[in-house]
Image (cartoon, rainbow, N blue to C red):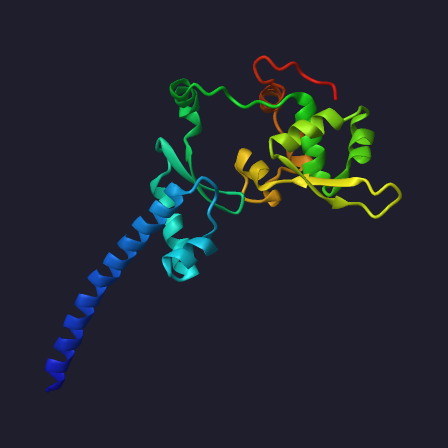
Length: 216
């Protein structure tokens, strides 16, 4: 085979490989999309790579492409609680709730205060929470435990062995956070404009319909 024939053969082989690669990537994109769609909880990139038998780096690249493709649509692909999950676009939430007859989940100011203390100070005990808030937080902690926003991490090694509390993966999913590192700092909150702070406080102080705000 002459050098010219060899070059032509190599070119033809290259031309055939590229469509095959694109077909493989298209297949992987569809597979990953299907896996996330059927899951009712966030799926990690590692888990997706294992099930799809694909390199983790490639999975992350494809998931990034999918996330961009779903941006500004009725359903969005979000990375929350350390994994990937399809979620309804926030601006359409009221219409979805009307169709499904679901009421919005709201937390009372007491629950928000307690949850914030747990999130920023974890692991933290109930006496420590009570000391910061200045009131008994037992009833509020019980509600947060029932809603799977807070969990028991263990017991503190001190007299009385008080329980230690921390947040859950459901907490991250509820607030749309990838990890606790995405929690805003106190400095970021104090630097909010007056209007933004009023909006944030109004949203946080809303109570579930029919549920009076508890002082505990």
